[in-house]
Structures are given as C-alpha cells and as structure tokens.
Image (cartoon, rainbow, N blue to C red; front, top):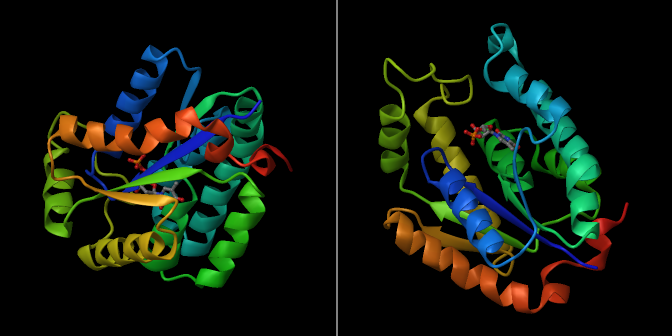
Length: 225
Ligand code: TMP
C-alpha cells in the first residue's frame, strides 16, 4: 500500500494553514484517510520543541544553529512517529510546512551554510520526501501587513520568529523562489493574493491527478528508513 505526502509552504499570512485544512477536509469528503500535520510540531515531543522555538520566555538568546537543530529534531520525530507509519498504511499526509521551511528560514533567512542545512535535512527525513509541495506566494508587503493585522490586543503576542525584521523575510522569500526554481516538478507555486476559494481550486488541480495514480504520488522508498 502506498500513501501520498503533500506539503504546504509559504511566508507568514500566505494562508497555507487554511489551505492545508481545506485540502484535508476535501480529501476526507472523498473517502480518503487523511493525516493533517504541522511543523514544527505534530507529535508531543515536536509540540514541546515548537513551544521552545516560538514562545519560551528564554528563547530570545537562541542561536541560529540551535534553531536549525531544534527544527530538525522535531522533524526527525514527526517523520518516524507519524508520517512513515501513515504512508505505509496508505494514508494521505498533508503537512503545514516541512523541510523547505528550513532551507528558506534557516538557510536563506538566518544565512546558515546551505550545504550544512541540506545535510541536516537529509539526516532528519531520510527518504521521506513530499510528492507535491504547494508554495503559496504572497508579495512581501502583503505578507507583512497580514502578519501585523493578525495581532491585536486579544491575540497572543508575536512569537520570536515573527519578530524578525523585513530583511530576514526578504531573504526567506528569495529562498522560496530558489527552491521553486530548483524543483519545478515537485514545487507548484500558487498566487496567494487570490480569494481562498480560487486558491483551493488551484490546489485541488495539482492534487487530484496524484490521487488517481498513487504509485506516482509517493515513491515506495518514502516509507522506508
Ligand atoms: P507557523 O506554524 O505559524 O507557520 O509558525 C512556524 C514558524 O516556524 C514560522 O515562523 C516558520 C518557522 N519555521 C522555520 O523557521 N523553519 C522550519 O523548518 C519550520 C518548519 C518552521
């Protein structure tokens, strides 16, 4: 049996979490067994790491290297505890962020050595790689204003990563552009300024053909190691 592994990527405010949830719902309506996950997180250990990364009161001192290792640790756990067993059982796995976030944020954003970042990604995931990645693209200024408007007196304060400056997010955006250019077959870009419904249909347009041909949607190797 062979599952299907799909990831969503994009900058803050791009709507990827909404779209991941909408896709999961649509797949369920089609009678598919679906696992909706998020990174960092998705397991008890991963959620603790997420808290350390985003909200812990002492995390302002965190170095870029520690951030990279924590992201990778959460991912190594998620891959082995949840993703591989789910794929082996034939489930559709939808993940809100995966390794492209590490390349974009820690590699390009934090300017860590890209080869070292890639080596850690490879170590964390082994052969478990998405068949399809939907990259929701939002112009930098729009992403910034959505990020601002998400926070008010009633919402939680911005987390450590959201506090990074505009130059950081400009580099992240360039990182995503480089990722999409390097792997156009896997990474499909979608203009996220469009209405939610339109984006949802574009997402479905990329996903549906993979459902008909599951053996193309996930290499058998993705469930190994
Ligand atoms: P989000 O769930 O709101 O998207 O928050 C996750 C944050 O973590 C977001 O700022 C992007 C960041 N992140 C990385 O920097 N590297 C990673 O590998 C992942 C998965 C997330």
